[in-house]
Image (tube, rainbow, N blue to C red; front, side, top):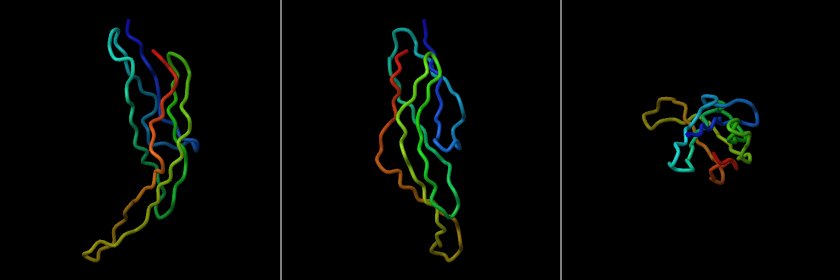
Amino acid sequence: MPAVLEYRWATRGGTTSGPGWQSVTYEEGGPKSRQLEHTELTHQPDATYEDAVRLEVRAPAQAASEWLEFSVTCEEKTPTDGASSPGATGSPGPTRTPSPAVSP
């Protein structure tokens, strides 16, 4: 019988660019783990945005990963042709994949 895992990416500040709750199905006899990826796009123009993100699971049991802090700094850059255009740079700090302690 397949198992359905319901999850979302959440930020400590409550603002996220994630799509909300999603699901992934684990087929009987199939792989018992999956790699879930997320790119957080939340930012503030001309400022440094700091927050933390984690993976939350609500089914088949509730679980959450540790918070992973990040910051994104947006600053205006002038292209070589002289025109003005906004640009973004980020410094996510240490990279690691949040993994909740849940087995389907």
